[in-house]
Length: 298
Image (cartoon, rainbow, N blue to C red; front, side, top):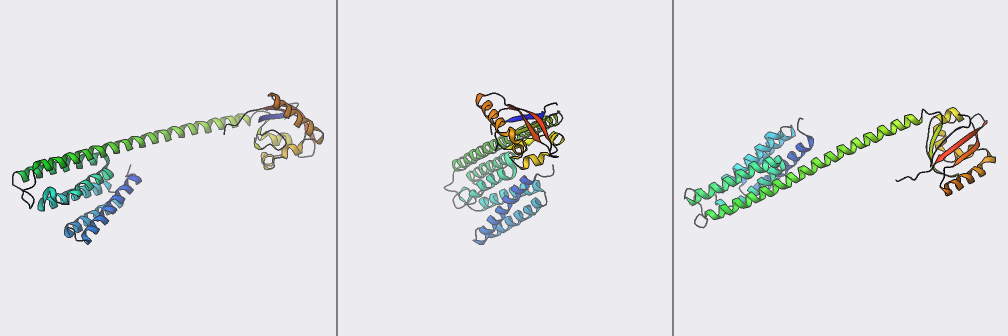
């Protein structure tokens, strides 16, 4: 119940982006190290690990552009070399192309997916043409046909498109979330300003405004500073004891006023009370107390 009473007479690199680059490069370095330790193209993996470590150092220093693109192009070049020198499309290194494509999305977003995906497709098509023409020859050349390379290029294209769409959707969600957060902050700021204006207005009117639950044991939530001028008691004193108000009412006025408030609320009308209130210096003053009942939605 809301009441008032008065005397009866009155751009460097964003940190999140840098962290992502660092984490991806750290995982790539560990992966290259593990492959080298289990003797899978050890020298190539060691070389790639050195590249990842150098890129990681650059990323930590804040040079994320050089770190991400250096690592991607080095990985793509090494995997291409392994495929060319070994078994072409049949080489297990082809799995690395998918890994590089996914890493491109993590490191460079949509642009990375588009650039690296296109390079991988061109690489696979070029290898298919070269092997079909007999320029590239490996142990499985007699079994490899251009259609195999074409199918792989189509799969890479599909993965690139899907990854691009996923990243695009995530970016849109991020933009939407930022917009909603900004809008919410603006609303909160408007509410704070409105509350401050209301509070300033309340604290300037020549009366005491307070918010409290009805009844003897009602919880007090707010009382304006004017109460100190009228009663001598500060707002802190009033709110520190939930029965402070009731205790200051003259004993002869307590029961009758509680009954009048109760009947008024039951009838759905504003309580209008008059009672004697004890001040800090021991005097009693007459108070006119008019209430406005409302329901808190929280």
